[in-house]
Image 1 (cartoon, rainbow, N blue to C red):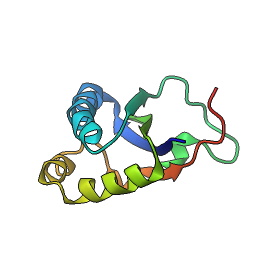
Image 2 (image 1 turned 180 degrees about the vertical axis):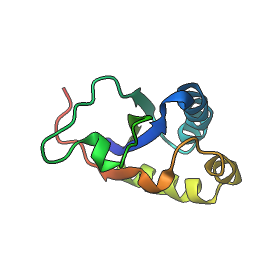
Image 3 (image 1 turned 30 degrees about the horizontal axis):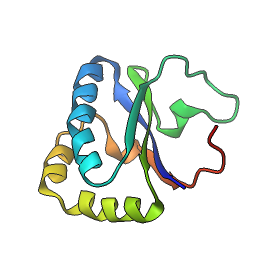
Image 4 (image 1 turned 45 degrees about the vertical axis):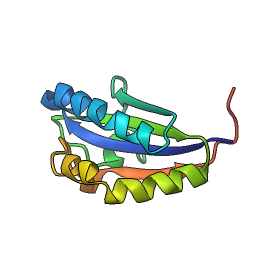
Length: 117
């Protein structure tokens, strides 16, 4: 079964195209490292919750939009190997220095699918 890395982050609203370009440039590298799919979603209907919500989870500011994204891999083993490559590849390091968002407020995790219909 596949494996999914999920991400939630806040991006300045006026940096939408910069972020899209950044993600588009990263996609071939993730594919090279074993990803089968990469999806980036720009927040469109992200309501405030009573206890918590996406905006609070990443401490989004008034001028920021929440981005929800995921990367799919064929297995956890492929994902783990990809993580090693991501952490050591100089191209990824260079891209990391130009991220159009505050990476300290990004939340992420690895997930094992339990239903895929």
